[in-house]
Length: 388
Length: 220
Image 1: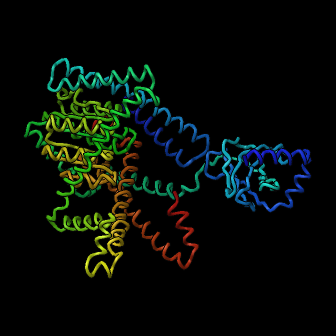
Image 2 (image 1 turned 90 degrees about the vertical axis):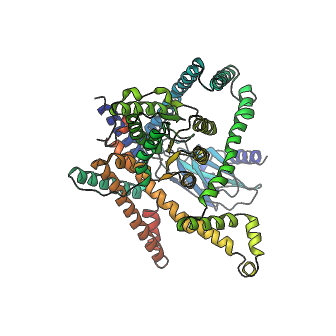
């Protein structure tokens, strides 16, 4: 009803002014509305932010108008209730000039702001809020290339022992001795191949499949994503070929179950209880299914190696599995298992990256503490150290 | 060429997505968005592969009368039945497909999820045994958090003789301190390490150092 009243008032006001823009200017010059329009920075373009301060009452209605010329014609962009003081106008054409004006109707009178300055929406060629990330990426890439170069030139790189990865051979050996299969889950019931943890898991699958083929131990790989299944089939086949045992490859052992989280969990639990695998590998992205899977595996008496970078699922794996690869360890697996110098160099770069992050955290803490006395330092931290 | 072409594609696609992260301009963002749409389309097509594999595996099981073959029969019947119902009468609210999903699939998933409560109890029982120094620390921290996070725990604390009346909010504060300081610090440490690991893995793949995913086996 209020909207109708506003529209009617605007129409009446328009008729009263009779298209005479000088009359509008006269009304606007005496208004107490301050209006500003600016192009939104760091975006793809086509968006303008309009902000204003207007003396409004709770029952006031505001109408934002837009035109491509300061003389109009202005057309309504949005009708807003009292209290709102900014609006993001989207879907505009880059390169065109836009003008804005705000009208406030408080039930009795209609007040209009002055026409804003011309604003031209444009896309940004660099997101200035991401400078710090670009710098961090460049520094880390530099470290990575440096350690790869060092490794190629024969430098000995020490990497600490990772218990979970050292136990991979033990788990495969145990399954072989017991004459029972190995179960490998490349991810949980919700993850896809685009997930970097799934890719890391598939790399480890290649190593496990090679050893399993060497020892002639069946390897079961139930998948929740068809693309992961296809990749897993190819990886296992290649590993069997590399191990000199192409006959060890059985496509039906690498199967698709479902992409429903708990249906997948039920399916894998069923496999654990029916096939009684002697070694369970659960490496990748897992959600609520992690503990259900790990506890079922524990109940069957299998040796279990789990790994994930999902913070919320790590405690469950630690509680229910024999070995757990925590966070970064799953990404270090391929280098650790192959002991290839070039790949080992990348792990060394990771360690230095962590040292760099630690240094930046300490620097941030010092600067923020000093900012209590020198506020300018806070700007530096929020702008450069803590941007997106 | 069989190895080089995928490596070139991986590098270019990876580099372009990094570029799109830093360059919000429409000229880059639109094509990056387009690439992501292609990914969704390709993934949708692979579902056919998944269904094909499911039919292949379970049909063979039924044909060979392997152990548990009736379950495979039920699975295939459900698969075909849901497909017919969905394709024939639609999947929107009010259709038979929607009803079956809501009344069969959803309760079954919920039942599976509800098992988690019992598994948490059994896993906690094993994890919280004070076998050594670290396990004892875990046990103490867990007891404080569990008691401190429930209203009954705070109520009981306030009725403890001597301590409760002198330090009424101590349990709540200690719980919050454990969550905010040691717990948050540990989590962030893992997150930073994992993020660097993920970047390292992505760069290894982009630069062609990590090739295991290309099924050639091994590194460079």
